[in-house]
Length: 481
View 1 (cartoon, rainbow, N blue to C red):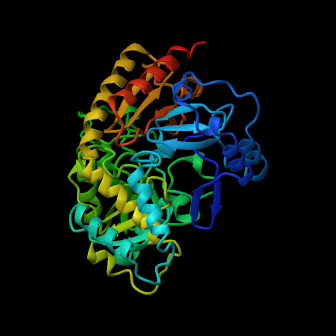
View 2: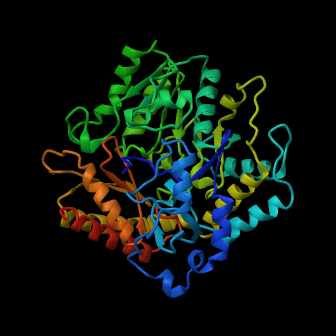
């Protein structure tokens, strides 16, 4: 059993590129056993799922040939072989509602026909150029992103992951300001590079001590577990005011940037109060720093109504980063900055897979699909309904201490006792196993591993919400069993 806060899938890892992959032998086996990989309609609707009779070949090879740190969810891990819309199938023929989307990455449905067509058409044209050459998909997407991004954000730099996107943003801020210290948040997550590991606010995700100097961590705007033991709104958002004290006491007093996720993803969907980012942005700029919004999980309408999460706080960032849902599963990373910042990124730089024509085509197709189908509104409407259903569960199950999030980025924090707020990670593990039996895949997070995270796709329906709620309800009912 693995106690992880982030979903990990069977991956083939190449330098700077991750793609979901399965062994050739396994794929051939699926082709010869179509009744397992492509079950009939009646089989697709079978829930709860059947128990495995033997260890999956893909899981066996995963355990044998991958780093042990590349761990899987569940006591009996599953191997995903097919996805369509909101659902995925494992190699045993079981269907699941994918309510986590590969960690909020499949944004508009598995095998989305319009996104797939854009990818296939581009692969049949040209699949790689590197940033040494211009390509039309890259230019078209950069132009579109400049149009939909808030404020004066205009110039893009493409990479292949959220880690690279954040690293690019931090470097750009240092070059633009001539300063080197960066303020980040406790409970935050930035990726796997040296800079990212130094920025992470979780001991769980730090296999070694920080390798990059000049990164300081401010208290997270975690209202449910306020580090100052105060209550909102009477606290007057003390966590924001503390950033001033932090800069004055732990830095030179002049910083390069403040970087934060609008909603802290791996941290358990910690959602700051409405005044928080406005206050912090003012403090940051008073000390010479730039404001970086890490939209790797909150971007593309995920939080409802807006393209980017930070827009809900009426703050105009100097830099935005994103990845994940931007490509609907295709590796992509993106950093956009104001011309004043981007133009100071002087000298030569290069990204082998940055601006890859296939990733760019996928990104454009995703943005167009979200726009054409008005999925930002859908995230607001369906997300609102989802929140209501979660609050119903909160009233029914005392183990739920907090419900939080925005749009289709919702979470519940489980506790032993609502008064003491003692974290209950074991309850999360039990709910995980039960929802899996019910044919639903969910995520988890939080410093203590006691938060259930969800990432329903932006084109999800109320029926999908009801299916997820039913599975959660059963899981919560069975915690004591």
